[in-house]
Length: 100
Image (cartoon, rainbow, N blue to C red; front, side, top):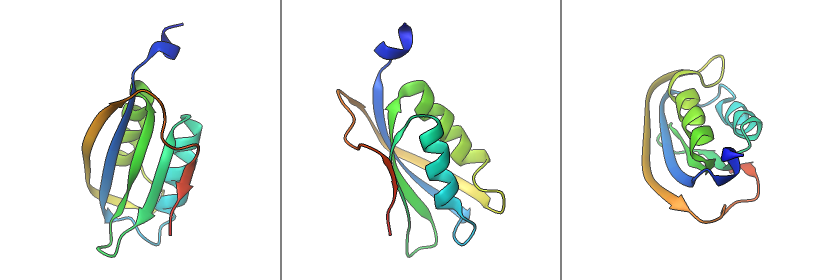
């Protein structure tokens, strides 16, 4: 099956808008797990949410789209930035965690 040969990638993200106090991290973790991704998510002092996604390219792209446009029900996303995309030979995280 083609899926198993899919490139593994890692990408960092930062989400701007009303994304704190609206369960954004919890929903991000749930969506990441649903897609089979690993990584982390945390609030920043600047009022944004940031983290890292790792997994198969198509799943990471689905998650990027979700972070751009969906988020948690009460969130209002004004901008999603993705950077440091790189290919991986293996995943560097074992789960999808919410960091304090």
